[in-house]
Length: 84
Image (cartoon, rainbow, N blue to C red):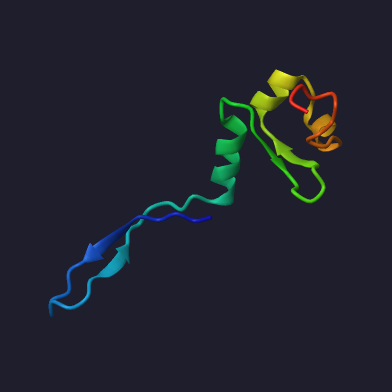
């Protein structure tokens, strides 16, 4: 997902205003990943069809005590997890 801010440019003829893209940095995949990894609350991404964890952040690792590799071998309904 890419988010950009747009600014309306006035038309000298008074017609429709066209958005002009400002030189704003895009929210790249790397930035989204960094925000996910550094978020202070536990977060994870789960494959909807298999229930397997695809990614977990550091807060989830600290809270549940599993390392990344352990999480990636588990499913969201694993009995070792307190919410399942």
